[in-house]
Picture 1: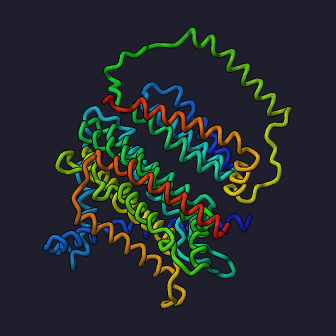
Picture 2: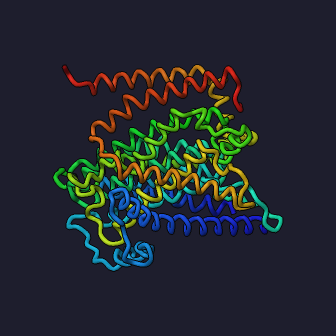
Amino acid sequence: MNEFVLSLIVTLVKIGVLLGVALGLGAYLTWFERKLAGHIQARLGPTVVGPFGLLQPLADGLKLMTKESIIPKGADVPVYYLAIMMAVAPAILLFSVIPFGPEFTVFGYKVKPIISDVNIALLVVFAMGSLAVYGTIFSGWASNSKYAFIGSLRKAAVIIAYEVVLGFSVLGVVLLAGTMSTVGIVEAQIERGVWFIFYQPVAFILFLFCMLAESGRVPFDIQEAEAELVTGYNVEYGGMRFGALPLAEWYLNTMALSAIAVVLFFGGWSGPNILGALSPYFWFLAKMFGLVFFVLWLHWTLPRFQAKDITEIAWKIMLPLALVNVLVTAVVVYTFGGAG
Amino acid sequence: MEWLIFGVLAFWLLVSVLGAVLVKSPVHSILFFLSSVLSMAGIFLSLGAELLAGLQLIIYAVAIVVFYVLVITTIPWEKVKRFEGFYRKELFLGAPVVLAVFLLMGYMVLKGKLASPVGMAGENVRELGRTLFTSYLFPFEVASVILLVAMIGAILLGRKEE
């Protein structure tokens, strides 16, 4: 019983820390993105609130919370509220299978810096990534607006297409590591002393595409094409209820999928020991935010694809490429022997 | 403690299944159905069948239900003529069947031997893969051929006429 209570407390503490850090970072990514977008477009970005505009996210939060909230006429109110939950919950649950560092010991009790180390962690990632589609579909449907609904249908088509490619692109890494557990994949890379991006460059590029598509980033942000759909599925939401949708999709999803990419292709927490006990965390976060930076950079540089091009690229080009990649990897692993 | 987790999940499953049957709006009904699929995945997870839980989430909760959702949400329900009332005849026909099946299943659970665990499988994914590709290779391959046929059929149906 004592053991059980202890593990329960440790898990609750981990969840609390992760929620605080993830939501705080998510809020501050808005500041970072606006600053970055400003400098890319030869502007300054937020400068007024606080030094370097650092208090801007707090001001935004206050503004969103004090706004008048309007529910559109003919909206399905329970589903309208439920849709926000269905968008935010999977994005947060994605973080539950991310290992931030190696196992360490506190007062003789072993702690893993991951919330649930299950051996189907990658399946959980796919499942949560695609469960987010319900938030989009139902937010569009429940607001009883044509623009919102067209946006949510576009997003559904994109997610269905890219979810398949995502699954197949990651299979190569699973074959190499011989496990689906995120901790196991990182350990397999550390054991061999090589990052899987060198073995699986095609898979990484496919994963990157899918990551952009799932988190609704340019060039795949067709569901919120501002010019034609006035931001799509969340157009009828106001105040903090509006704020939650982009927070989940643009920031939490991008961070979580970047972290998964680091686990799969960049060796997780591995790196030279420069900060002592904190160095694995430093390396993990550095790699993760490197990828997030790359995604934001693309967002403010590229134009957007047409709706039909996006699904065509997924089904006609990327899916065959992913299948060939899996086949070649399987043959190579079978002939030369992997960790099987 | 396990009975508590199982109880919560089972209660959630029952509520959502009843909701899916009793609720009037089709969209609410599909939401309850989705919730029942999720709680089923939770039950699998609490019983230690992790792979089954993951597949339940990916295949049922996402791949299958999403198509129902797409169809149901695009239909303008306010324009659809609906039967308002009580299905009396169906209830009288259906109730004895439900009762009989319930009694039968209750008897089986109380007296018979249904699923008793034969030793714990160490790693779900590895064990399942090994079983599928050794003992059940032929049915597995036949199933994949059937799926391939269905896929080709779908492509033929969806093809534009030149």
